[in-house]
Image (tube, rainbow, N blue to C red; front, top):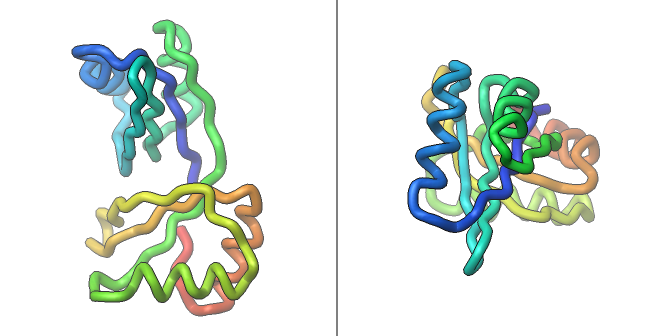
Length: 134
């Protein structure tokens, strides 16, 4: 199971660069990321090389940050693969809160990152269907 950090940041010029600088200063690598914004604040979700250190460093620099478990699933880079994956999850009667794309640097394969309130069930269903779960 992967750890993802969620960072609550003011929607202003330079915010992302400040976050990435804090991660750089702590030698933390970003493996995947998605940003959702609103008028005043945004949520930056990242899978990083050291979630615990990242949250601690960001908190020390005034950011609200928390970590949660997410599922990473390696998929083929072909038309319809995401739909096939989502059908497998739906057949398991599991809700996905959100998802985003990353990639496995070792294999070069795309990785779908999922958040669900039932991460162990997602993991079990997908392993039973033959998917590679990271």
